[in-house]
Length: 199
Image (cartoon, rainbow, N blue to C red; front, side, top):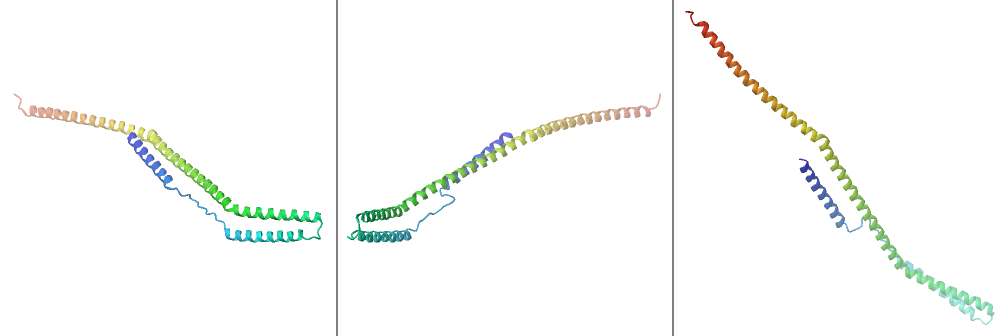
């Protein structure tokens, strides 16, 4: 009986774990799907306007530098300003061009992190479910060993005692029957001897 229960529990447990593994393998899509997009049209327009404005400022400053009325110090200061504006234009353009790549890297990192999180949650859920099944199996085994098996032994002993009592009653009934038959024979013998005339 215990072997049959254990075999049934092992089969149920193995079926449960195989179903859990199938669920994990079938679920390739993440539970949370975040789509990160960036509106590059607006940023490109902004970058183009900023570049044009900075180029316009640079051209205006260059025209001022070309003015013969400026001193050498003023020309050097304007040259530095033009170089700074050109560097600002270049760095702004490079930054805006690098945004899609940075966004893609962030999206990939976020996707990997969310997938790792989901895998971890699935693993923990499977571990918890396996622990629950193990606790249930142990509880069933404990119930069998502590309650059902002693009760079964008590019932077997009680059945054996009842069988012994039945045999004793049967023997007593047979003895009573034999005794009744003997008593009847004695009574018949007494009656026959009393009814015979004395000589």
